[in-house]
Image 1 (cartoon, rainbow, N blue to C red):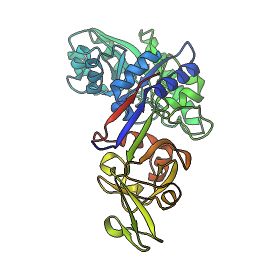
Image 2 (image 1 turned 180 degrees about the vertical axis):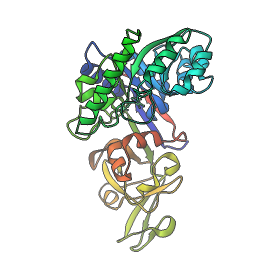
Image 3 (image 1 turned 135 degrees about the vertical axis):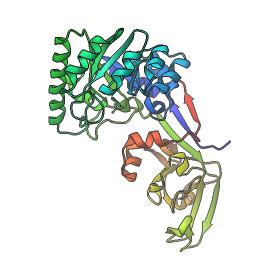
Image 4 (image 1 turned 120 degrees about the horizontal axis):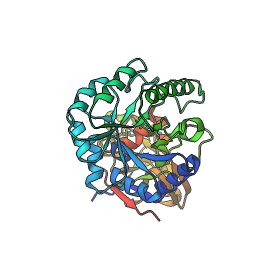
Length: 373
Ligand SMILES: *Cc1c(COP(=O)(O)O)cnc(C)c1O
């Protein structure tokens, strides 16, 4: 019933996928990253849209996420990048998922897996997070060679700094990755799918494209680096409607702790969205939303379910009433003009990155899908 919802534009995702496919060219496959429920957009719907757009595979973080895709009928290769625990290899096998081996501690589980299993091996070239180090690699390769039915299909690494302007460390990581590749081939494995690039690397470091690129954030329309990025279409619009309008005298405290006081006679509009929806409390008196095509400032503390915006100027010029649309993320056209708010803007105000803004939109916010055109 609440008018707060996230509208997901599947045509924008298809557009972005085509843009990435164009950049990658015919010799590099695109694996769309749909972990964390498709960066908040809905993994199943996004994966269907990506499949139609011609991507060759998808990546998730967890076996559970891969199983959700299989249950929904996704038949693309699904790479499980960061979460195969204990009997997870069995589950991955049963659901046709491709697990990543990223730590020698996984090898005993892999050895106990009954059937033939295809895995990708991850090398730590500088993230110090997941991945087998060059030092551990010879022993791991020996163990993989001894494991019955294990087929090493791919070799991967992940970049720490691909979104930074200075490519030096990414080149260091690439050198280590090539060294690992040489060791793996010398041990008799291959041919392998080699992959390293995320969105940022895929766009601006051609050497990193290899067999396939694992692209996430760009598919959702967020520029993977601040300047000179590709033209991408944001796929999520977070919108609600005004549920109450009031006029208050100068000096009125607004919201919890009276953290904001009106400086003049003000017209305030209440919106049914709060931090439990992913509209961060850090945005208190900080964010702007679009109403009637113009920006209105959030005033006072964002509450769990509600927030308040100052619409004095918009209301005097164009009127503001209950039922008017308020856009927290995305574009709006109205009598006052046209404007848009990108996830990058909110991220900057909160002191985080657009990835967190998108994935923070909580389960309480229904997703509505605009079809791919
Ligand atoms: C999330 C993730 C990606 C995608 O990164 P983007 O910056 O969203 O393109 C690629 N590889 C790994 C290992 C990841 O965890």
